[in-house]
Amino acid sequence: MGRKASWPELVGVYGETAQATINRENPYVDRAVLVPEGSAVTADWKCNRVFIWINKAGYVYQIPTIG
Image (cartoon, rainbow, N blue to C red; front, top):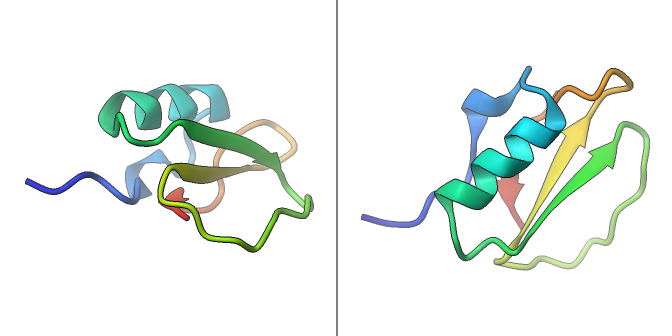
């Protein structure tokens, strides 16, 4: 079975809960980063990083995906 690379089920979940879930489900992800809405991020792709886009209330609004 392959490693999980996206988490559509985490949309609407509190950011820190989503972060813990990603870290638990894919041990190769060592950077699950909470990114507040409107923030800029680096454009480079990394197989060990997931950006977790959160709204002002702290909830995930976009599917977290490796990259």
